[in-house]
Each structure stands twice: as C-alpha cells, then as structure tokens.
Image 1 (cartoon, rainbow, N blue to C red):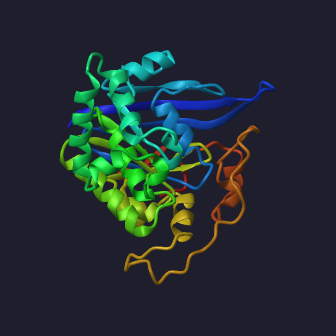
Image 2: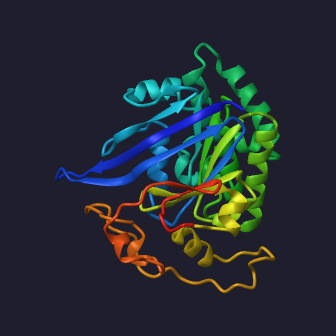
Length: 324
C-alpha cells in the first residue's frame, strides 16, 4: 500500500492579543496508507479540533504553525496561501466532515445551493443544470428523499438528514482523504448507526479511500478504525491497532480513559467506570516533564521533570518510558 498522508513533528500554537503563545498541538507525527482508517480520541480540549485545522493546512489567525510538515501525496500543505489551499486542496485532496451539521450549513440557503456553490468553485464552466444532476445522483446514494432534502433549508431537516447532507457535500469531489471531526456528536444512537453506515458505504464505493475519524468515544473506534491514536494535552501519547489500544492500553492516560468509559462490549460491560481525577495542564504555561504526571496513578518523581518522547513498545508507539 502507498503512503498517502504524512504528518511530521507538527506543532501548532495560538497567538493571543498580548503576544503570548498557547501551544495547542505539540510534536505530532504519523503516516497513513491508502485505505487506512485512523481513529483519534481524547477528552475535550486535548487538541483534536486544532489538529484537524493543521492537517488541512488551515492556518487562520490566531492559529499558526510552529514547526513540522503535513504532506498529502507527497505535496506539502505548509506555507501556502488560504486561497491556494481552498482551490487546490480542500474538497479535492482532503475534505472534512465537520462537527455539528446545523452550524456547518448556511441557514438561509437551500441544501442544493450550498452544495452547488462547492462544486462551482472547483469545477469551472459546469452549468447549474449539470451540477444539480450530479447532486441528485450523489444524494440518491444516501437513502433520503433526494428532491425534498435538496430543496429544503437546514432548519427543515432532521438532525440525521442534516448530517448526511453535510457528508454528501463534503465528499462531492471524491477527495483522496476525509477527516471526520466527531461526525456522530449530539446524535441519538440510532442516527449514529445510520451515519456510520453511510460513511462505510462511501468507502466501499470508493468515493474516498482513506479517513481520519475523530471522537471522544474510544470504544466506538474499535468498530470503526484500523489504528487508534490517543491525544492528551496536545500530544499523541499512544498509537497502535484498535484491538491493542482498546483491550491492552499501555499509556497510563489510555488506561484511565478506557476505565472512565461505559461500554456495551461483553468483555467490559461488568466493569464500573472510574473518573480521572484532576484536570489537564494549562497549555498557556511552560510544561516540564510528562503532561499527564499530575493525574497519573503510577507517577514517579522523575516524571515531573523529564519530558517524555515517543517510544516503540512492541508494535505500538507510547509516550511513556515506563510503558513496558
């Protein structure tokens, strides 16, 4: 399999109006092969959504790249203008299924007009008639009343219809890779199942082939992803196969995260969830040592002073020198 997506030592920061830097993402590296599904999980505020912007080359102030590189098909997304990114990367090479479909859709425009604008921006010279024909053909795949949905305003649709519409719009141009940023957030369990089924149908139909699936629901990723990366305080602290991370976590934070979650899996449903004490560190302040040290039940004195780097433990990556 060929490598389609590469992230090398990516660090991102927010610049405050006082000139201070908040290092929201720190030293993130991974590669993805064509056809791979990578799940990224972590609690709220760990840097997942900031990482999404960086992976798409969307460095819009106050977000700025600190260091590192992001490459799609060997082509770097760094140091490129927003206009260049919009015209030549977004929707064509990398597309995003955003979190919160209602907020992603323009409330005063019909779905067909929102979708047509996306296509018109990338397919110069195509008239509206052909655009609408292509829209209808694509939306017919989604098991919805196509004419009704395309001619509706977002407020007239159910949450599931809005989310499926957003997925349809995000994948209209058959991008190489899709980043799904918590696509099942705020949906009931039945609708979540429909949305996930739709995503996998698009994968099977080769509408796109590679995906990053971001969520805070770690057990969900066992059924969705090939590999899972766990984020904490802006860093990836563990990365391995879905089975490894869910059933044999090595980093103390991954263990704590699994212990804090409810799961319907037969192997875990008898276990009582345990809260993770404390709070993540303030990224606006300098951090020395392991970022999880203040909350870690296995902390050692040196952990608070020695910064942890990614280590290879068996067949996975873990940011803890005591993971073995």
